[in-house]
Length: 151
Image 1 (spheres, rainbow, N blue to C red):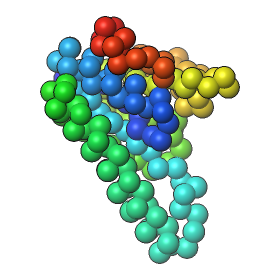
Image 2: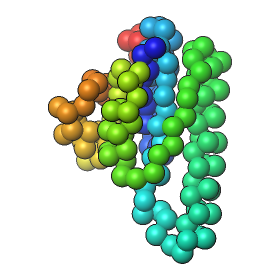
Image 3: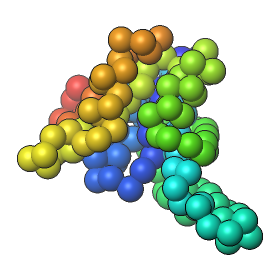
């Protein structure tokens, strides 16, 4: 089964990327993999404190994921999988795409800020030539109605 890989983070544009991935998966019979990356700089503390912080980060990610997963299951009939990795976000996204042969499309949300589409979109598009899958960039300001129309 072809899966749409979408990145879960704290950005506003993440919402539209999630919606797009779930709607496309529903309409094409695919699946959704939700990837969240815990940056290594969050744990540069004493070992015990770092372990506690790592577990708290995983719990926050799981809670955030469950909100999206419930919507995907209830509204789009898609049961997403959660993948949590630790490291540099771009490196971990590339590694996951290369490791999972079912990933067919990487879906990213573009920010609406005047500074540009966001650091993740900027960095991933620089690496797009070496990825084995296409990248779909979803504008962060698309309405739900427009997303439904184009998916």
